[in-house]
Length: 167
Image 1 (cartoon, helix red, strand yellow):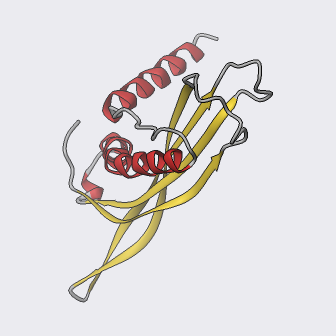
Image 2 (cartoon, rainbow, N blue to C red; image 1 turned 45 degrees about the horizontal axis):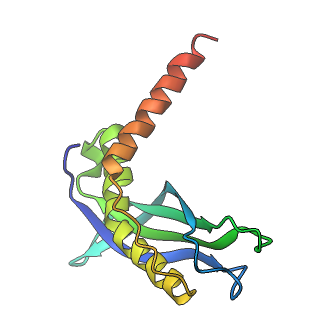
């Protein structure tokens, strides 16, 4: 991936939810199974950035890092096997230097690799604090290699596109 200078103009929680449906009756003797899903979205925003009195048109992009963690337990005494569900949509507003000089693929790489790489530690910390406040050990998500994730997604899209040509 080639390097491009990205600037973040803001970051924020767009949506957040924590469910703890079986508290305080969830048995703590069994470790829950944890399933984590990660999704990344990008939306182009139009705007201007004023710098030293100069108004310059710059395309801004809102990157949304959506993480859902669901913990379940298998226990006959528990009617619903859900220990907790924690979901956060954490966003950042980004611009890319020399945006017009980049290919579409270079822009996609910057947005879908650089953006979530920056946002992930903040979303991870929110999830850890929330699960701890919910009466569970803090859920410390493992680091995510967004470059590998992007490459795998691109490869899957290319494979499905080439397979659809043979129908």
